[in-house]
Amino acid sequence: MNKLSSIIGAAAVIAIAFVFIIQFRPASNTTQVDSGPTCVAEVRGACISANNFWAAYRLLTYRGGDAARLKAMGLRRQTAEGLVEQWVLNQDAKRLGIVVSDDDVSAEIFAGRAHVSLPVEKVRQLGYALGISEDGVSPLAVKDRKTKKFDAKTAEKDIRQRTRLSATEFREYQKQELVASRMRDLIRARVHVGENEAFEQFSREKSTVSLDLIRFDRRFYLDLVVDASPAKIDEWEAKNKVDIDKVWESRKTQFLPECRVTRHVLVKVADTASDDEKAAARKKIDRALERINAGESFADVARGMSDDGSAARGGDLGCAQKGKMVKPFEDAMLSTEEGKVSGVVQTEYGFHILKVEKIAKDAEAEKIGRRQTTTELYLSQEADRYATDAAKKVLEAVRGGKSLKDALDTHLAEILPAKAEAGDKKDEKTADAPQGGDDRAPLSADNHPQRPTVESTLPFTINGDPIQGLRSGTEIGRIAFGLQKVGDVPSDLVPLENGYAAVQLKEKAAASKEEWEKNREFYMGAMRTAKQADAVSAYVQRLRGLLASDLKLNADLTTEPKVTDQSGQGPEEVPLDE
Image 1 (spheres, helix red, strand yellow):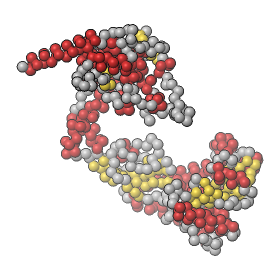
Image 2: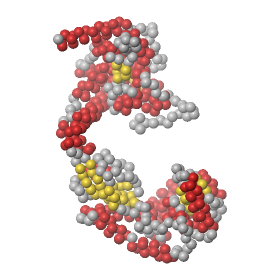
Image 3: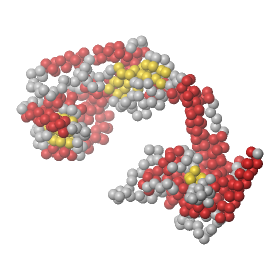
Image 4: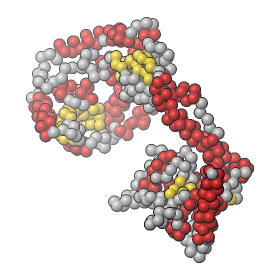
């Protein structure tokens, strides 16, 4: 009975397909063919049809989409690359004897399925954006609106409107697409995922670790440890003159022909600040100006009241040139006389007061600029050296059996006493200076925002990103999961944007068998799909290397047209992977 039903069902499909073929017959007088190049690509003397290119492009964009978005996708080039992939798969299919019949093509049309190739490595991303399934199927309107049954005239109309191909052309194009699709299916069918393999991958991705760490920030050592005395800078300069000369040559245009040695006080105002917060900030900057006008040192007021990173340097911005500051600040700097203090200046950052200590020109500007360059290079190198040495010493002490906290306490005790004493003397020296109620305490080891402390991450997987401020390219997951047992430390430091971190394994939790059983089917399916995509991609790339090394794409078709928005400006090109 089941066999008889199958025979009857197949006969019905063939009969309907026969009616469709008769009604949807070639009609060269009514086929609309795009003018222009006949080939979108040429390879080994073969022509990949421009008509098929436009048919594929229209099938991909049938849901619409603005031109700027399609251009940003690079859809013309991706459509052409999809046809090249289809071509190389068809060539290999001939070697393997893989074919499709006219009945196969008719069955797909009857089901309302038009096939279109996209590069295998882009099909998921592009397909999602365009509303095309991952198997490269674009729906066709083949059913009568009233009866909801297949209607040959409806199918003919939709296909002609959508692809501009004749019946013969469309069927031949779809035959090529079906062959390519079968080749992909054949490649996918060879991919197998063993349960042990999947569980190992699952364990790697679902196991978690957490770390203890200490950040050794260069700014801490720059503010509190590095010897910034003129004598020390002179000594360093004498040993590094060649390197300084190279950097100075690249920087001197920042100072010449004129620059202005400037200090400033900044009271920040957030973009989201309320009217009351803005008013409070204005009152604070007004008090700072009153103190300066009353005779207090500008540098001391900046140290006590400024919210800028230059506060520790007494608000020193170095010798600033025109074109380097935000405009309101620059306008005030250029209009302020040497030795004078500006009024309150408002910028996007908040309220400022600035003092131009010197207007340096030509040779004097070069002397100041060179010294500033030397100082900056010295301070940067020394701060980095201190941070590196500190992290290495702490890491070595932990390997020797100390806890992170004990190792850090020992390190801080070694480097801070001399500086603390110097700080006490400075405080005694300035104790009688007038102080405003807004002054913050001078920077010290106790209140420095970048003081090294022991902190812990939350549990994270191998692909996690648990530490803020990692230097680009640092694979913290690989480092952390390379540690075997609690208490282990890596062989090297973890680089940060502003220094280094010493890390230690705190906890390590393997994925449980119970969790695996709950997710086994889903995970094995997802892993199989990923491996199948990789296999198809590798196969296609190999074929392209063998069969399409002399490929020539037609730039007239694959280059995206210029698109302008309402403002008349063209959209910015965005790489597809972004």
